[in-house]
Picture (cartoon, rainbow, N blue to C red):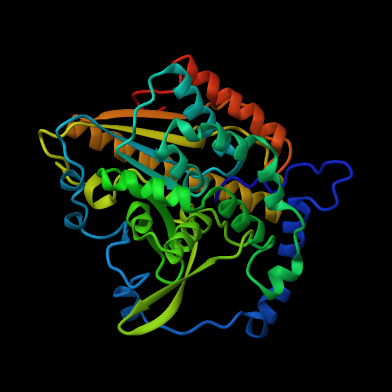
Length: 394
């Protein structure tokens, strides 16, 4: 989601304030923001790097890991028995382009070849999709509703410069939280817990701004706790993974370390990890998977991977927007190429799906319903006809 906001798209006639105009105003007021920073910042309970290093949530260990931890921390081959071929679905960020991933999943179901995934990971918009992809085709209609009914378009309504000046997000996160809570209740928590008990893994990624680390949340373990607090944490992680900095406020997550309680600040997982396949410590090992282990990796990228020409206006907003897009695209390609090399060295299956370069870009910023419906259908038709997956990077 982090890289998907096209802030300089043309405004729609009659639209009260587009995302582009709102962000443009926010940038023009940056000087005022900095001037008022001391008096407008929301107070936080101080904590130290040592507290963070030993922190845990829900007073439990093992609910999350960090992507930069040593390889020994990620014994995936032992956590997931290798007696049969396992499948790993990695869902990238992409904002409104998540409609493509939903279309691919639903078309895959229609083709009759969609597997039950051993592991599902999600980043940003992929983090919103991940629990339902993990639970299987029974939730295909739920995903289609989220991404094509128009409900997502409400996430970017009523921008407020006051929120930028006296808060930390242009749109607030009330609607994002309501969207997550509407579709994720005790029944979803119980269903995820049941699948977790079978040995399957659901992972969602956030970025901890305080430590600048990529956090990998074990959503199955959280679901297995089964308390109202666990449900709230489950929802918070999903919302945090999709909280684009400046656009949405960070999600504050209660934690405890060295006997002290504080709140961690979590934002969009795409800030540090555009897609999670395997941690770096594994990807860059010569041999990172047991010789008898069989794994098919499916990377579903909710964006374009190939560069395209666009005459960029010589303005601060356009240059910044285009630069962020280029950075994220390069980071995503790097992860994909590293994963492809890892799969080749370890004789694992590699499958990649993404939006083709020539697919038309949206005419308006944000979550435009017409664009998302068309993109959903594009992904659906590719998967239903067996054209969604490539075995090599572009």
